Image 1 (tube, one colour):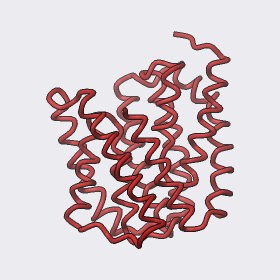
Image 2 (image 1 turned 30 degrees about the vertical axis):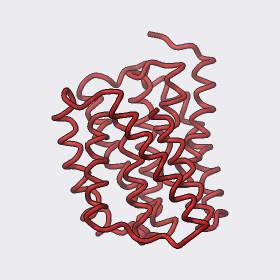
Image 3 (image 1 turned 120 degrees about the vertical axis):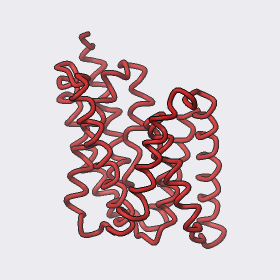
Image 4 (image 1 turned 60 degrees about the vertical axis):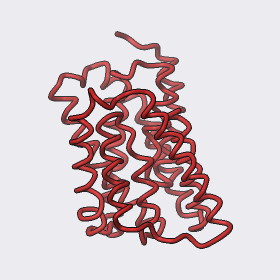
Length: 243
């Protein structure tokens, strides 16, 4: 199925905005781009393209800021629990998948992100209990296995880890790089990567490159508090998009 070039160019503008947010904070690109882009393209065409673009952007940021990645946090406190959750989500897809669960997740994310914005300006943030963090990362994996939308829970739990803004972004981009690489391989093996997907990806790539440049500049300008505020505002929008 051929797509309209004007739609693709408008989508490139959406990609610029969403990947600027991704470059600043380490998350947000797919949630924003899929939510808005679904009005112009079928998901079976859009998602493989965006996942591959995610792999390029996050792979670059992961390689560039590898020295800021807290390896123990990534491989001990996040990946094992997310991986277990993803496996459970895939196995339980036929039982749990549905719009009600997705809307509950969206509402929950909106509430906790709004709470965190308030706490930034009213009191000091307390670390989340380790058991609660593990639960959040596991649930994030389950939601990702069901809807490929587990990012908001990952971001909330990771935002309470002892990480500065660059370390926070580096850990998140490493997580997304791993997931995007596995998903891209899945799309290729299942013949979901087509010539049409490649064409759309080429058109959207300049928006990703421009978003990377803009995001890198803004990431350096933002203070820690403003960075946290930006993260929770994007997180709130991500929750709203699930509704």
